[in-house]
Length: 520
Image (tube, rainbow, N blue to C red; front, side, top):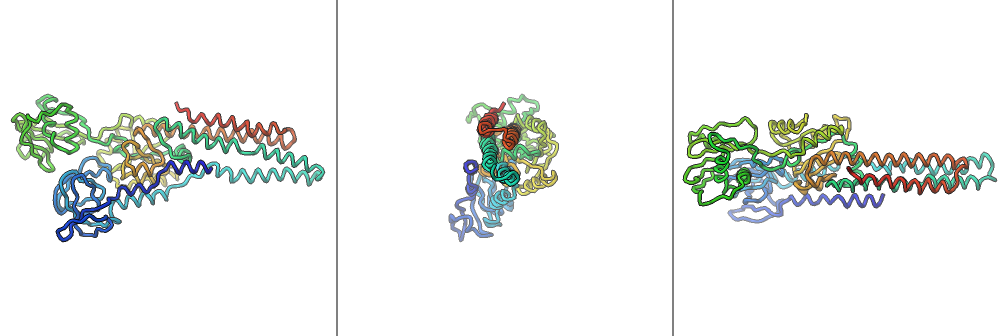
């Protein structure tokens, strides 16, 4: 038990790493001068400066500047959010371009990031603790065996006379040798560790035997969308030309977006896949919040929102698809649209189907809009979904699922900082190890190193197989011991049979336990 506890504690790193999310210093403007101060020293209504690429340290309202913010760490939504003077911003968002000046509305201890850190710690405390089998077993087995052995020595001696005391003492000692729980004490933890080892071969890190036991009992999986069921980055989903070839549409859009650092522009250039000849490009102008105007071989390109084309009198036909659309005009004519979105992982639908076969219901919890959530849920085969959820809402939904299912164990799988509180709160928290944030991985009980959602079904199968082997060893060991104990009490078993019931059964149980590491 001691070694097992040490191994479990070592597998889970300290949650203090969460504090890496806290900015070390903040640029604050006081009396026309700038100072670098710790975030705890910044007061409400002070003005702070946030440069390009920096994380916003405190909640506030933009007083000067325009930019786009990456809020994916907080909301899971990968599409950047445009902000200008008068807009509210949350700590933990990243400034993608330009200098922003922000008037602080919440001190550090009231900020969004600080609340997430608190939620992770509080959620961990509210999680139900699964008691170790050995602890539960020993509580009953040990006193029962000792009392039975004493009874076997003294009761017959009192009834038949103490002249036979040595005979009954020998049988009592025989009883203790037979009942020695070596087979259980060794094979049960070994089954767990073999199961954990087998899971690691599949790229699944299960942090300790307790979590493997809990995983086997899970009947509901709540899952995040971005980075878990989807790839978590912009991808060109389709190129829809109008009166021109796909190549011409893609070339025009790629050249227009070639100078952009926006995720949409980067995705279009990557899809184009050819080298950009800068000599063909001129007069590139970025129109904040709308798109790009440029000239390619002297012909004007407009690339961006529908409103950008409409301002110049160009009618653009829009797709009914809920994906993000980029409209393109060349030389005054609409030439088509490019649809972008977060591509669903190839194994997501398979994962949901396999989990259903294992009797595990999958529920989608996401910060995305309802139409996006509904579309993804339908594609992967999830019937129940909840959208537009903040981190605290996800925690509430998981607690509601636990309550609604009459304390049925609920697992949650996610990858972002925004998922960390609910990962910590769920009976089993599952994090994506490749794309996942450090804070989510630290809070998790299970880490999928390959970011493959179908590995969740593997983890459930491995856990259940391991628990089956554990039960087999318990039934086999106790069954043989019970039989030999009866023979011993009746004087029909000698020390050689007692040794077999102890050591022999232990060897057989250990060999059976090693099956946990062999995963098909």
